[in-house]
Length: 630
Image (cartoon, rainbow, N blue to C red):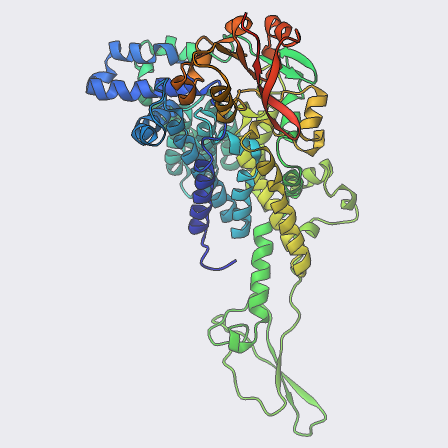
């Protein structure tokens, strides 16, 4: 890779690429269920702060602003509110006023920007540990994950918590190697505080960071560092959420219980509908395995299965070997001012005076570099002794007893025994394993991968590590390197084939979306397939002021908030699913776990006709139906 692409430049470039790809496609997904619920409070924060000024922090204002949205901390909603308010004039100039006055399209600029920062962060982390090529692969891997990329388009909290969670984890992990860890834990604690202010997932960093710090630093050095980290993060958390300034203990207790004391969500999984607390244990493992392109998983398993390999040491060995083998005039051994890569003594061979015998003179090193070149008689030459072999990473752990376990649990165990070779790879594995194990219990889990979305950026680091290992294995063949690069880029098929409905992506392990349909899996969850294309069809075909309803809906007014500008100009407001039996037009999302009996009965009555569908891979995700007037 060109020396121009330093790690900061590479991270910036991939961050900008991610931002452009998301921003240029922001209007693709339809309005999802959670977006109005997150954008509305954010706009209220901004509006109230502008109106009240410093009184915003008085108890009466705090109670009024936060009372109905205290299930989540405010940082993500602040970001959405700022983006929505700032982008409102431009959205009005371009598209006209929003009939529901939420300006969700402008709010989506916030997660797009945060996704760009997340891509840059993952690029930087992987490049710093495994080289710039690996950094580029990590950033691109994140972009090529269709569901992760799709979440970056939505004005919701999931991309925010992914970024702040990973930022806090990487800062804490890096502090472990500092000379004064307690001091480095201050910025790590600030990052944790930002994560705490975003979503409840941040509390899971306590056991992860605690285990890493105490195992790495020991109790004597690690405990003070943990106190600094925890104190900094919790202080920022309380300071940043005025709702907790009053009745702190009671409100904090209620907040921490929101994940348990709430209405259960219905989940469709292999043809059955479960409450979210009763989903089978393998649900998170299945969705982790099936919502990332399979080729990326192959590279990730390679990066995970060789955690005992010191990739950095191998790359440095190859670099030093190239320097050592260079001729004197290129700055290698014997070159003026060069430093040898290994402590080998150059040997000068000169022909003897008789011409039939050679005299060998050993030139010793004085620690300041190789001896100066001295003129040699005609026919003389420098001979460099053989270098130690740079063992390829894939063979670094090879012995007769481990060959068959190259990509098995035995290999992982070997990696753990040799974990000091690359502790970063194992540190990254810890939170991935924790989330998957945690959601294998009776903790509520739904919407496929969304609740453990932060594991995918960390998985991208291991994907990059696996790619770098494979790249070094085929270092001598341009053909194989081209094939490896083509294999990686081919993983972008899912991104292009499913956009803008990347939240419905399934990989080839289940046969894509047709396979998911046959297995009875959730095909669409948040209603993103009810997009402007489908609603514009309704605006074209329906008579002015026609009755229309959206189904299913999960809260009152969801249909009205889905109403677009074109529908509003025609006098059509979408009702909720309670209006399905009397509406002439029905806009249908294929979230069948929430289809009620009256909807199913009307669809199967034979009196309606399907006007349009939105589909991917031959599977419909949303539809427009017309029925005779009741």
